[in-house]
Amino acid sequence: MLPGVADLRDRLATFRYSVFRLETLQVYAGSSEDPARAAFQRGDPTPPPDPHQDQWVAMLRAHHDAGRTQQRVHVVREPVSDYLAFELTWEYGPHAAAGEDIRIIPITDTWPADVPERDFWLVDSRHLFHLRYDDTGAWLGAVHVTDPALVAQACFARDAALHQATPWADYLAAHPTLLQRVPKGA
Image (cartoon, rainbow, N blue to C red; front, side):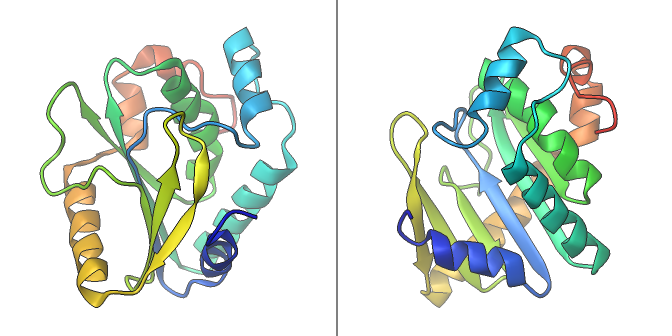
């Protein structure tokens, strides 16, 4: 298992109040979503079965039903890449349906103010995990950051990102070519 992943997974499964994810990469590689990405690129109407995705969606739904806040902001360079078209439609649809608040910050050139160019998870506003990736977007692991000043900076960055972001459904509504790729029921 990658460094820090067991601790991160445990925190994501047992958080008490809120979890926030900032995504900044335009491509993520080497994960269990590869078969679904291939199906998307072929033009299949729906993703193939994916037990990992089903487990994740079940966890999101359980947290939502328990009243826990789950939020994600993705900074998206436009025009969107093929990968982002896949993520925005096939990946985020089931997550949003399960209760995750997903938002998008679209950019064409300037990075949004007060939003770091680094992926992270923030759990219960006190556990910060910086995520590490290689140049291809393959995940290398997570670093649990315990410095209170860095955790406070991440809380500020979360608030800045949420303030600047557009709700996922509104973003898709403004991009009909993406909206038509969302599988029915998502």
